Image (cartoon, rainbow, N blue to C red):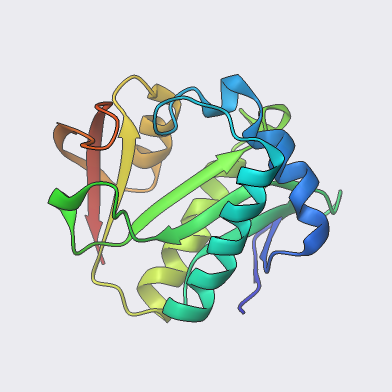
Length: 172
C-alpha cells in the first residue's frame, strides 16, 4: 500500500492498533451525525468496516487511508477513495471522503488529507472524475468540498435509509 505525506499528516496503511481509536470515533454521535442514518457503530461493527477497508485496497488498488498527525503519530481519522455503491444513481463512480475524530475538527486536516488523496486518485490511479457525497445539512463537509474544487451537481435521497444528500464532483 502507498504512504502519502503532507506538511502535517501521514496517510498510511491501516494497522491493528488503529481499531480502538477508529471504534471510539465511530461511537461518537456527533461524528456520526451525518453518516448514513446517523447511527453510531460499536467496536465489532468498526472492526468489520476496517476489514472491508483493507479488502478494498487489495481488490481495487485504492481505498481509505488511515490519517495520522506527523508530529503526534496518533490516528486522527481517515481520508481516501471508495466506491459509493450506496447511491446507485451516481455509479459507476469513485468517491473522495473523510472522517476525523472530533478533537481534530476545525484544524484544516480534512482538507489537507482529502486534497492529497484526491491528487493520488487523479495522478497515481488515473481517475478522470471523482464525486463526493454529503448529507445536505453537513455544511462543514460542503466547505471542504468547495476547497477541493468539487462542484455541487444535484441533490437526491439515499435509497437505503432515505437521507437527503448533495452530490459534488470534479474532473481531473
